[in-house]
Amino acid sequence: MEERLDLIRIEALSALEPVDDEKSLENWQVKYLGRSSQLMEIFKALGTLSKEEKPIVGRTANQVKVALEAASGEKENLINQRRIDQVLEGEKIDVTLPGRRTISGSIHPTTQTLREIYRVFGDMGFQIYRSREVETDEFNFQLLNFPPHHPARDMQDTFFITSKQDRGDDPLLLRTHTSPGQIHAMLEHTKKYPEDPPPIRIILPGMCYRYEQITSRSEIQFNQVEGLAVGKGITFGDLKGTLSNFARRMFGQEAKTRFRASHFPFTEPSAEMDVGCFLCGGDGCSVCKGAGWLEILGCGMVHPTVLENGGFDPEVYSGFAFGMGPERITMMRHHIEDIRYFWANDLRFLDQF
Ligand code: DAH
Image (cartoon, rainbow, N blue to C red; front, top):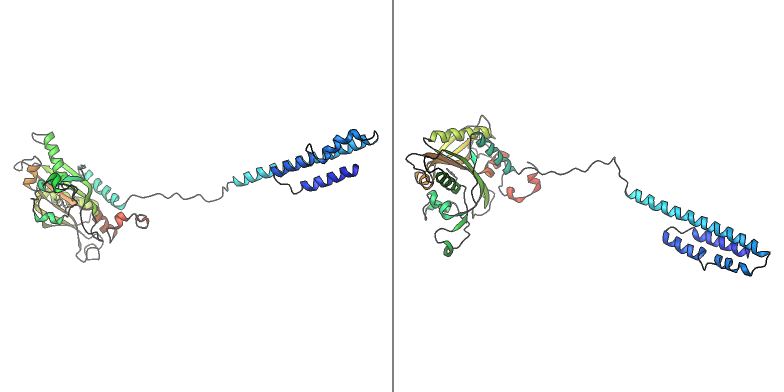
């Protein structure tokens, strides 16, 4: 009997050695300490032993049981400790690691230029007037003195968004320029002040659309900033002064300007303003194509018909208007050769600003 107990102890302890998880420990406990284990069979058989044998075998069986329980407890502690160690290892934070860089975006180059334009004209007392992008033919063309079959319409190929049947000669379209906002602003103003309207001084920024071949120099979608000043006694001198001042504030105090005669249906006289090339200082370079001058905007005195369409009496009121392309200005400033970059959403381009 004692030998058997010894064998049970040796076998149990060696079977415990490789046990390394809760499940196999449980199996081990069932096998060596459970109700139908060999050890328990011996306890059950104690009653059949002789008086002399019983206490000796009983004591030894007890010693084996205690030894196995102790070994099992130790194993359980070991397994628990290992699990805790694993969890801690998994949650370990290395405080010496360098932090992860957060990538922050930047302001789109066109928006940067737009904001500078707002600042400069804001300083000169111009307010921002926002006008719709979906226009009627009437506002985009007719009220701006483009008669129905005027050749200048061809200069601005248009996205029409209604059919001829729907609206006849006044189809809806995506505005080809910000100039229709001039009419909206003037009509709103003269409706509000039917008698002796106070002067208007506004810029009208926004998106314009043209049905054109996309190339490095022309996009179907682009921004414009329109300007309008209407009041009594406004002259071409005011136009030149305001726009030259704008050029100096925008491109530097040294910026030279010149005005060349031009033609727009909604202004008379009309002009284009050039700025002395801010890259070569006028000597001629690839940006100004050797001319020393960069064309910045179109402008002119508001045509009497347009003033009238806005509700102003052209005998009493006069005004000037201008329009510029912030993408174009941004291209010149940063020597960007392809306008398609502005909408390509390529981070390699955008990251540079
Ligand atoms: N609307 C013109 C264009 O899209 C730009 C322009 C020229 C606006 C002269 C004006 C202006 O207000 O006076 O090309």
